[in-house]
Length: 113
Length: 112
Image 1 (cartoon, helix red, strand yellow):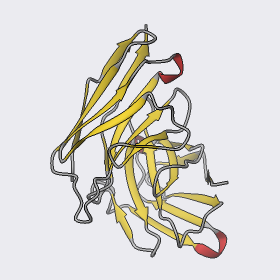
Image 2: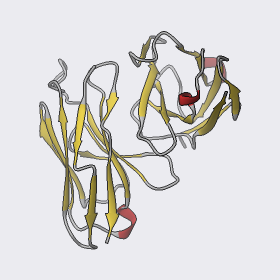
Image 3: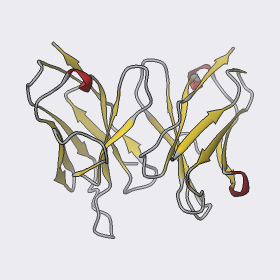
């Protein structure tokens, strides 16, 4: 059964760095990429970036300067790091398999000023 | 980046009514491999999004066949043939042909 689960801090201070982990099971990170998506309160979905099965990455143009996505295939984990957080980075952060057929439950992150 | 324009932003339907949602792309979503990577997702209130349709018209496993997708190049449509109460939520189109991938702004379906 394919599963993804996000974990990380609930509250982060403005100007600091957000670190989230997506732990996957039921598939290999060398066979599927993983996408990060976020959703600010009451707003739509925003595609953040992807780490492909070969380890290459692509990022949202608006976030590219602050965002990095990495992985540890031996632990089946994908990592998101985003620096210089602002209050408008407050959102639910989701990870999903590349083909979007399975999603995590989401991690709610609040950026406090 | 590719911009996806979804219309209408909100939709109100009675049970059994058929409805359509449009998604227009700022550039062709036909990939060089011959596939068109336009997906439709539904986010029910308080839930994670779920995949309904992939590659324009392919129904994801477990999704009822009252959902159908059509279109090509820059114009795409999601149709629900006979809305049911469980269909309420926000529908998003999403393109995965051109990186960075992008979502439409969403269409909220309400049940009258």
